[in-house]
Length: 459
View 1: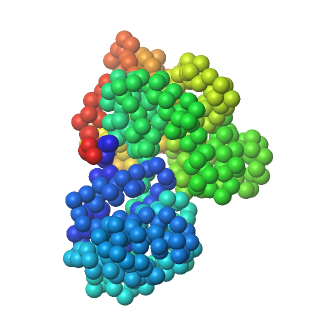
View 2: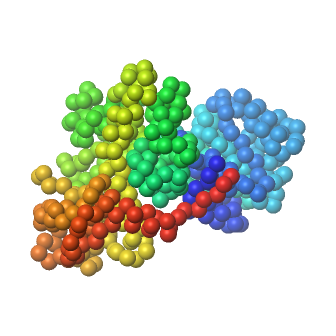
View 3: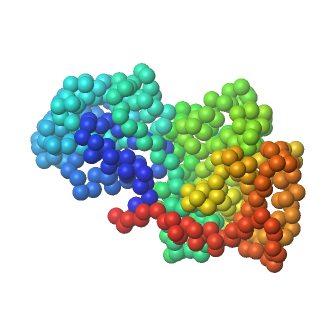
């Protein structure tokens, strides 16, 4: 098992542990993002108590956690109150009690979070504990732990919300593949740590897709359905919305027409998909942020996009003969790699900014009346604008010429700005010198990411 990156999150936990103050920390995010893995890595080498809330009924939850405490700490006890459980654990784990409750959102309706509040208010300053609450179900966690009505509102000292990996981290799991296949693999499995951990990079990408997604009983065969059923109250509606966006519907009217869900009802579902689950992204042309008429919706999670675009529409054929579908799917994956390449280009530009090689304040796509530019980055201070074309193929002088022509339509400080042009391409074909133009090939991008590798540990 690989533990990859999460350096910033580990640093937050380390700082909390060394703070010398009572700490009540919430670690949460969508399922499969590695929350438990993160906390267990933090616990390594430390004496602490790790419990899982397996039940949502008070009596069963306390009985089960009593058994866990007995096993973890080597005692025989049955607790009638969570306050007593935490008090004994904190006393046994001195001088710095470290207590983790995983899947704590299951305690939402048990009254046990109120008992946690009582323990915290009465004993935290005397016993100086560090309690970490780990939760899935983003909406539930935010309601039961972070909202004004939560019993522990105002007591939480730090909040960590985990997100998926970018290409910098995801490529670690595909190290045995050629760079082209890493990009293709990223376009399929995206940045969810659990999905990436299943990859066997000694096998081909095709074999991994077959083994992990297509075959009956494959671990990711119906993964998006599992997540939607676990995380939402109306999974059918969320499924229909994701199907609509995957089919090309990007505006509210189009999504409503595809799903039959009234337009005025869509924002509440899209807010859950966007802010709660991180599966959907609402994007605007650069400079037009916040103007609803220009908003587009896309599936931001690459695996969900792959599954709803290519797997779900073909499920009857896939379940009949999964291997026969591979050639068709791999053709589509080659097309999808272009979207992943655009995301990688944006990530690479952010890396260049971190290094100080370029500077910009804002970055995003831009479109207007049929003209579309993959990425535009603006540096307000120097009046510099970077126009970026991402091409999953060969770039030549015509590529640069088309980008220059499109750039003329961009309105920001037209006539008094400095223009720079950047081409991201898998390969370059007989490209003559172009002024104010930089070319990054896949090889260049891979070298830069090699110089900025994340932390990797074998566990």
